[in-house]
Length: 362
Image (cartoon, rainbow, N blue to C red; front, side, top):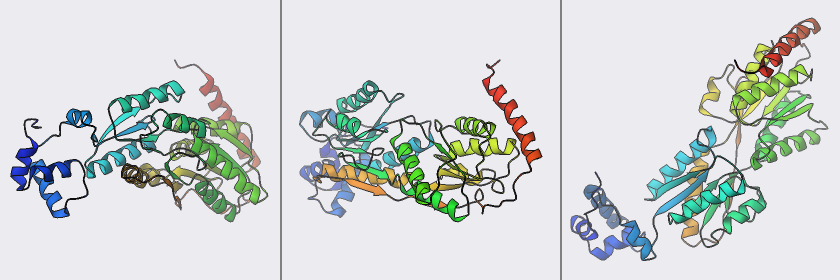
């Protein structure tokens, strides 16, 4: 139970130090030894001391609270990043308040940032896809408030921590080309996502570097359903491809189901590579080859860089690497493909699926 009656004097008495020393520890001063700081923290925990943040703010002191503006936490990546941010901030004795947006309209974004600012946060991490102009506009809402952006273009002039948006697509295409594939279906993320757009552009450029072009490119909305529906449509339109590069693992899950229901074997007939390396992707059928992004690393680094800005650093431009995790959905291309008769039968099934998708729910 929190005890708001406990004062700094009580903490000082418990820790056996002066009031001034406790004050320096609470206000994150660097002029305290590690041993003394730990003793004060132990006393704070023992007494359940809660700083009077309103008084601190009125006195112009830091609130030791970080803000996080994020897209829906129902999605895997944002939820993992948010959890990492909260954990790392807590380790640094900072609280985290979250503003979640359900729209990427400027008004919704600005309202979320203003909500965090009104809570007197010391800095904000923004895990929302933004153009260069959009990120600059957000920063101008509070020019003196440190902000870290996690989903912007590397050319942006704001401070950011982000995954290399080109490396993952490059790794996926390089691997599939090495396996002999020449006919590619690119299933990208929504156009509103800067990282998804950059990944798609990188994949196309990497294909061009190999004198190739995608057979088809379509966009999903990150959901397994959108991956399923896009793949059903691609097959129904009789596009012939042997490799699918998908912008996230959930859409890849939908792609795997669509291919299976159409009678195509993965990876014998079609190879599939996802993106993210979610916890579940190793348990798909077959286990999914994917591009791993370390969301815990992104969350941790974002907090650390934001605190560095609070300590006087002037600039942060951090790009984190990704890596290929090869499992069972990729294999060497073989020209021993499905017979024409069998393919015709599968296309009839796909046509039936399309009719079912277009029917209103009962």
